[in-house]
Image (spheres, rainbow, N blue to C red):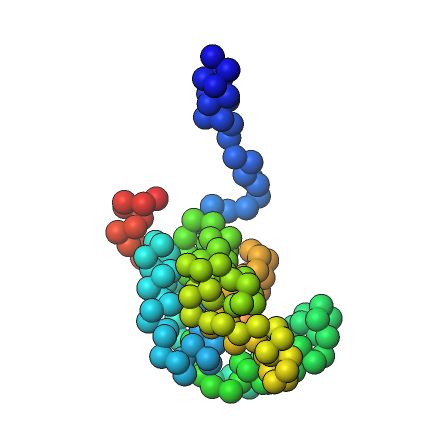
Length: 184
């Protein structure tokens, strides 16, 4: 009897949802130069599509340090100038593929797929856990930014800022996918 009561309680418990947060979201992904140069963009991209995320914008750019500073606008304040300079050197060493994904709770779900910022700590099955081995210690010893394949927006607020920085409204598209019919 006690087991039945607990099971029924769990079934009726509703997850807490922030009513101010939209269910359908957009988030920014950057395929960093290390993923472009290693020719693994297609394999990584498939992870997002397999999960049901829709690409609504995509382009390749080779950015300069000034644009990189706009993208990493708060890194110096949070982590120091050394980390900012390492990130700027890394993101400007080759072309970057910028992509906007759309889906249910996209910011949070994409972060789960991507994995921990430090690949050494990333769980197997995540993008960083499967495609990278870099660690903070290695990056520090070589005085480079961490090679972690992709960037993904850390919050809905970050996503809104980053998408506006990388894309104009005309570069973002609306269309239906089969996932919207079968998954949503």
